[in-house]
Amino acid sequence: MSAHLSAIDLLKLGDEDRKKPFLNQYWPYIIGVPFGIGTGVMINFGTRRPVFSGIQKHVVGVAGWCALLNYVQNKRDAYFAEKDAVYRHYIELHPEDFPTPERKKLADVFEPWVPIR
Image (cartoon, rainbow, N blue to C red; front, top):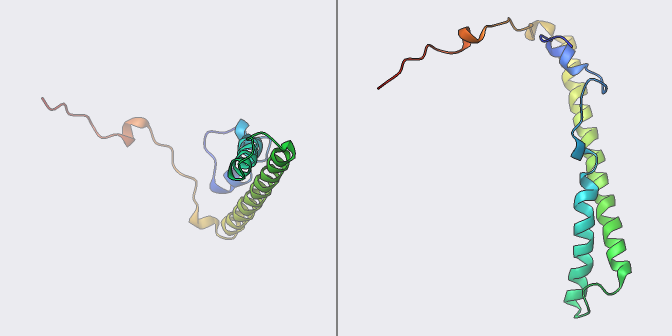
């Protein structure tokens, strides 16, 4: 992959070029399991029963939380995909607004350092 990409090249990178974070695909389950178990525990605590009695409440809670968070993740992915498509379309229509940035050396970016004693 080139070190210097234009704006449209950055948006056209395919899935094989982008590395997704590990937790990005598992966060609904990592959060859904404790929340689902906690929901069953809180229901039992509120009704003055032993906290882990009625295991079906815990199973339904885990399934419900995981399904809800999975739905949220899918909506979030669709939102960002649409947002990227709008950006890509705008950049394709107006390439003059997005010139390829010129290369700079690090020495040109930093100001000279003057020690103050």
